[in-house]
Image (cartoon, rainbow, N blue to C red; front, top):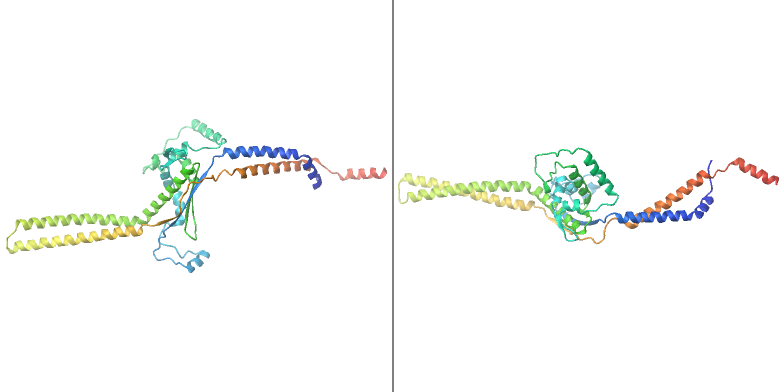
Length: 365
């Protein structure tokens, strides 16, 4: 059995402290290289409180809170897309493709769209170039795939969210990791954060994410009311055209039969006058319906309260150089101490027979 006491281990560490210090210095140098090779990342955050769509069917107050603690949702509103689904909405391809067409201005003052910034103005660590080169080599060797075509609308920059190429899919995946949305279950506050390598770009994209989200929710909430408004506007145009036609017909008949007192003429005039009145009443009713529909659209339009607006970050959120440096030094010291421990464990062998022989020799002496 291989064994040694703790004092032997401590004496060995004391003798070989230079090795531990040397490895720690090397690890510190490696940690500094890694820390300064990782590009800086800046995060901009926005917090907003959306208006909840409640048709009166939810249970609020203390009863609702107690039910939520038990895992029951008694306060569920009639809105199918609530704040809990906002992160899923932001993570969809259609939503992210729209962000690629947003015009941004970098900290150096350059103007471009967000897709150009991501593809041409973002840095990668030096060890990432090997992966990029390997991907290019594989692309050159592998036969080119025919681009799939799919009927449907094109998004920003000619990208179809329903049919993305490999490069576009990787770009959307990277963007999905840079845009983060979190919803507080208790307060319903929606927090949006965007992380890029440029502080100004982070702020602009965060504001754009909030704007696109507000437009999406507004379109969803007001879709039926807007459809009703379009329908009543069409009926208003039809009734207005019939009213104008009846008015012209009545005026033309009165002008051509002016001064005549025959009963047949007077009966026809009354009939045209009734048609004109009916057309006017129908037009008035449709005009009122249009006004009601417009008010309904305004009523359904949600209000968003901005709790915390975005601001340009001054300090990067990553890389955390001190943490990287400490981790490298700690691992180096731990690995060196472990290596010394293993050397002692497998190089010192105490044999009981040998100990007995030594004791016997000492007794003879």
